[in-house]
Image (spheres, rainbow, N blue to C red):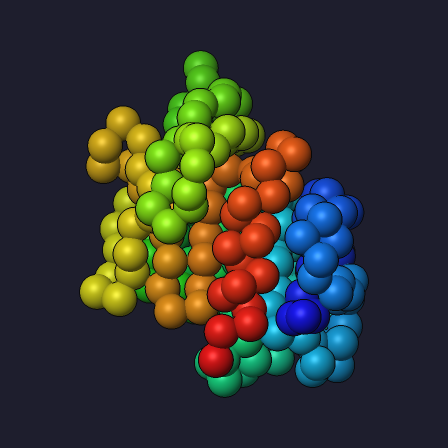
Length: 192
Ligand code: GLN
């Protein structure tokens, strides 16, 4: 069984932990750099990306996270987590980890529909469409060569993307009772 860490400094990490336990993964709350050493995957949860990045830097986690991902650890960012792992942002703040070859725009669905739900067809996820909960969600505005779009809405707005062992979702699977995407990430974390 893979051991999956959840960055537990801000945001809805407890919900991710519960979901991971539901799919039988071993979980670990991550708050300090040395806690990254023995995990196969890391989730950066939803929350507030400027706060998450500020705390990552205060706890000196930036380089350790980048190094672990570069040497094959899986990573999944949901919502603020997607913003945190992006290569570039349309916005001035925060300074992301520049990991995944995507450009992301924060709060991209505008004020009127800043939170909404919709059902998503997702490549590689079998069964009925997945319930997508979007809360002041980001959208991917550009992707690099190695990035695969697994789901998009209004065609042309990617909301789930994969690059090697890096996964990002604009929405919050951890706020539903559907564990299929956590199962997908568990498998990604076990992959060599
Ligand atoms: N809008 C938030 C941000 O920019 C993300 C919201 C969320 O994670 N639900 O960081």
